[in-house]
Length: 117
Ligand SMILES: [Zn+2]
Image (cartoon, rainbow, N blue to C red):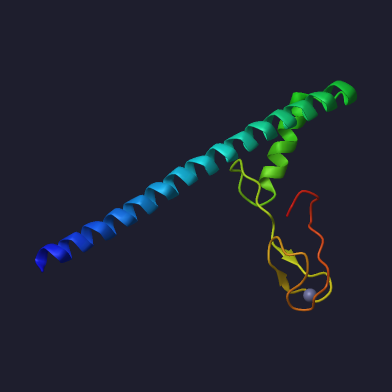
């Protein structure tokens, strides 16, 4: 009887182990996809910046200053951009970041900045 219980526990642990290994493999693939997307975005950003610099005359210092200004908008100069909390233009209620409409009154809510979600 003891051996049967032990065997069942071993089999259950093996199933869990297989499931965890599968999750780890999948996560590795997701991480590699994410890295490819970040690399591509960095490349596109660099290309866009160089086109703007060459055609408009903005300088690297202009870009650095603008990055610092945007970084400070959320109150923390931490190298990250966070979506700022929104207020509904119709009722003044708090709107969840990323929501397209007010949960209180249903009014359409536009993001404060074009690239905010
Ligand atoms: Zn509202």
